[in-house]
Length: 333
Image 1 (tube, rainbow, N blue to C red):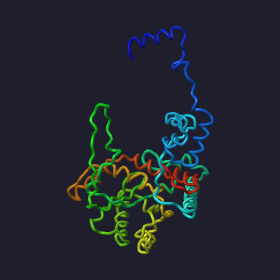
Image 2 (tube, one colour):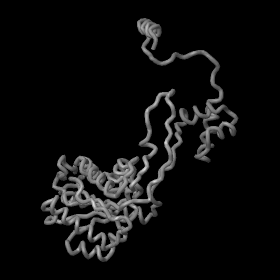
Image 3 (tube, rainbow, N blue to C red):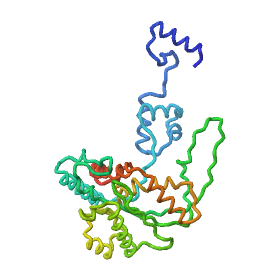
Image 4 (tube, rainbow, N blue to C red):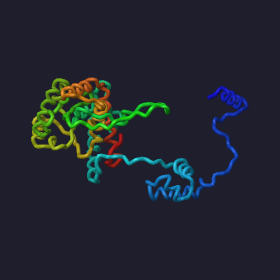
């Protein structure tokens, strides 16, 4: 603000002015922003939610600026894109999601000896408060593809610029065909096992049982006493996970599997909390060999704070409750 403008405002306030808003001015009254046009615009939008401002203005023969004011200021509409979801859920899928969420929440209440789960959480060291046995023993895991060349997303490449700054360009880059399958198991205290499948090797029941055996050894080293208390494992119902060979392995060692119906990435901590930050970290990186990629993966997990894992695991409670409140629909972030 210029010095003269500052003096002018000081003078106005010294004379008793108290408002910062513009004063009413005389002029030609608005004729197109009236109740009749507001009603007509509202009716058109309700008939076709995708109608554009320009189409409404042409149909009603009123200025686009007036239509914009009616739509946004008077009627309070805002145009948003549809939210993408992994799969269209049928009613039986929603019912199953609600039943499983209710069952798991009820188990938390029973373990806690209370009817309220709002105060159940994870302590700073990764230990669950209120002696919650389910989360004390819970380990979650899943697989994801990791490419040797992961392009940077458009959102991550955004930069600040002045109006006079040159426009930056970003060339379209495809993900490399070379990739490895990373299997990650973790709990509220941190990563327990990062298992990398060699390129070209598929994940079948035998391979997954071998991974579970390495997980058992890692639990023995990193979580003393957990094998004695009893492991509670959360993984999806992929074919290698639900195969008879895998079920026999789990029964032999007495590991409990918590219910996990199909199509629930929003209730799987690895999907909604872990893999997204991992892929963003790798965005824009290119590795010459698989060993370089694996080394970067291990460094990333080693540098994660325990609070990262704590927050991801403790958010399961609120997501189960939201799933119930939404009658089984997908839970947003």
